[in-house]
Length: 131
Image (tube, rainbow, N blue to C red):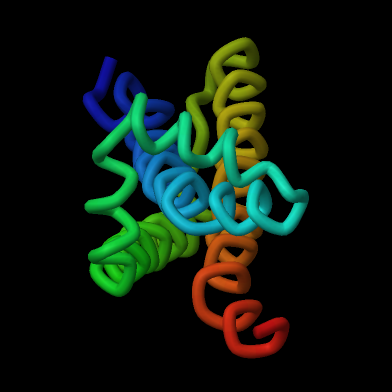
């Protein structure tokens, strides 16, 4: 079996998964604390920060966090765009699996975009609008 048929699914899904992981980091860094404070759960936020102290570091470097996450998501989008017309294997079962992986990776990509935008809103826009 040629290499491109064997590893197509892994190449197709790995970059959107990295983008989702990075965008979830932005959500935890900035949107979760804003949500907890806006709901009046400052004590819960204090407990969370004492349990997971690296959240302070993520919040301190939120521009870098969002920039790296955006770069990963943009790279995932580029990889999705470039692979949109790649052929699937000729075997019917592998072709069905290939198309399912394409739809799944598209779903992961758009979910990561929504999560990143939510985190961006709470980290940079809501601070100025609701302050």
